[in-house]
Length: 498
Ligand code: SF4
Image (cartoon, rainbow, N blue to C red):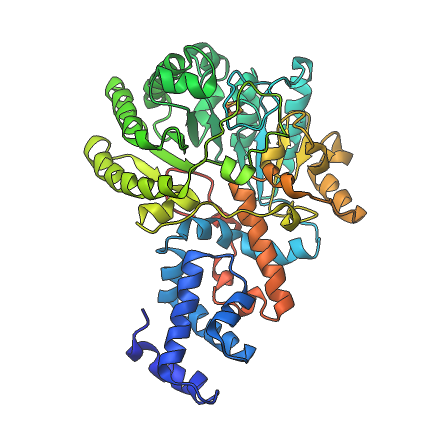
């Protein structure tokens, strides 16, 4: 990986002469080991690296880190071209705020997820929502006002998205939120199940055309598979019809609005990835006035990080019980290889985003699944300087999978409620941090974190451990300072840019 010619002189001067008993091969191997470790596991602590290189002088590791950190080729290799590149896309732009998280310093969140849904018509077997809970429709206008005030107060560079929580399009006046964000210059993505994305809804909410992107959660590829997951008759037919109509109108109203699907890989469906492509092709064939589906995100079954303990979240029609075992993931590795070929044949223009863990498989590297924080590793103040979620009540959730109305046990991660100016997002977060009352988390609380939260939590924990170990982030192998711009936080799925 490292060419002798490139580094020999640097190593001679900076390392070999400095430390006794070291030969060039060991130094080179140790540098490769650092690069390989961070190319696979960005959250690996320095202490683990120190043990693996087996040389009893921390300054040696600090010097090696410096060499990696200052080598642009190695930085690109680790953060842009490795199997872990999707993790790096998330980590890099947040890293400059990590010290504020560790020290409980107030900062306005870099990311806000808005959950404006009133209810949901689906009963997905992997979803943690309380299926009996819905917001009282009388609070909609007030809720929108609170959310819009928060958007007005947001700091420049904060990224805002609209999703669930429940299903956003069950809010009949969603357009008001989109309009507010768009008027203030935010590029807003919306995640929906598209069941209510009817012509009538669009007419009442023409602000939908101001979105930057719209991602439809795809729960199947035919009537049977859709019904199995959503438990709702006609869900397949209605979603398909709505998406086709939306794409046709999109091509007339705002060609720049990117439309895509998200498909969650489950043990029940992973062998049917080909059908997903054929479904997209079928839809695209129906859209004759321009582009069809722009992107497809494939995601690991998030129950693998949110948990599937039957003692919790019992208010649901059914629960998916199977998990992706190692054999399934081995099979998936092969299937993804074929999928790429089929994609190029059937949907050559489709941008496919594999997400954190499937990216490894797409690069033909076996990976056991998403990074997962245990209950006792959850940050006791969360990381509101990085990310929070807000629902229609104006409740502020530390973690995104907690943002379901009356989800069992989620009160512990609601840190305040937006209300008038005194109860702005800023004041709520400041009060929460000032009170200095750490939240006690238990094992099953990890179900409140989605995969993005798990990554951020892992990043902060790593930074804290590294600091205690005596090699803080700025002495590690990654040149984080090169990425410390708010603008580089990704907020779409249709490009690989961070
Ligand atoms: S995953 Fe989304 S669409 Fe499915 S039940 Fe949960 S909120 Fe509704």
